[in-house]
Length: 244
Image 1 (cartoon, rainbow, N blue to C red):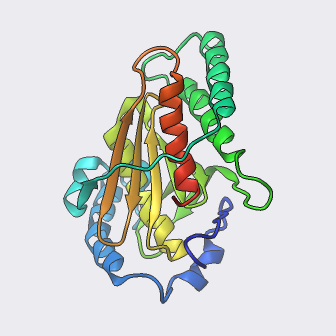
Image 2 (image 1 turned 180 degrees about the horizontal axis):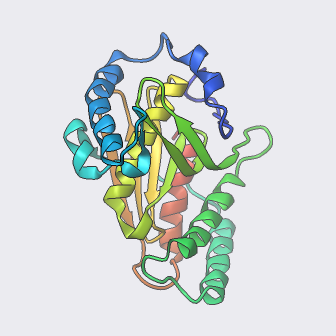
């Protein structure tokens, strides 16, 4: 499977992938070396949560625990132009949601979900029937070489998306990075993309075999997103999905 092909991962079917992708000849050995460093940390996290199995839940992994393993570089995620009518549609919808839901309460994760998902849905809708993209919700993945398990709020192709709980973006990054390693493990991918967001802040991640790249984007801290901020966020997501 090439990295440019759409990846549709169905809930609780990861075991069907293991036998064919566990020994993928295309997988760079650099990742296996990183996983060798990462796994003791994951087992440590599992033990702290009194888990007998040798696999850590994504939620149990902290940023402090895994940071020394990663070589994180800053990068600027390209933006692919999204039609203005799509941006205006998103903004109008979010304005209605903002009014109907009583605004964005700090740390209210349930509300944030309803502001994040419309952006993803509208970007996905830009792809036609000849190049379909499917949103998978609450995707469970359990690693084989990577001793971790958990789920993503959303998966889009090779993009693993985590909604940061209680505005803790570092914890969200830890969850996403470990989950991205599992996705790479199960599917034999050399590059996996990630997004961590609480709607106000968006972190774009690229997990390569030898490094991790990070782009941090801040929207308006209060109120409804502007057209310009939505162009930037939606355009970055659109570019990732288009492999630009």
